[in-house]
Image (cartoon, rainbow, N blue to C red):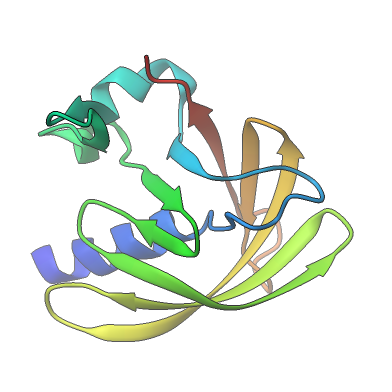
Length: 137
């Protein structure tokens, strides 16, 4: 069960990758499903004050961190292999690794505004997950 959660968490986190998609928005940073929970999902750690995951971040919906062509979740790390832009939508293929498996994952993302993106699931009408950029001081 824990392995399945890790994979599903990785997929949800990866949903929102795109550090180099500057045409519609710059997506580097920390993203959570609810802007009000940013301080429960992310913390700053170490001398460099790097953004990391809070101890119980998954209880608050999880999230992900995008840096360059990398996406990092609490249980998975992904590298964006390919991307195709179509209007406000972006189709990504990412190579992801968890503790138990490697896989290629496809993501279709829509930029809502500078601080909001939405993952769309092709073939499942009405299925969307919205994420908000966290501003951590």
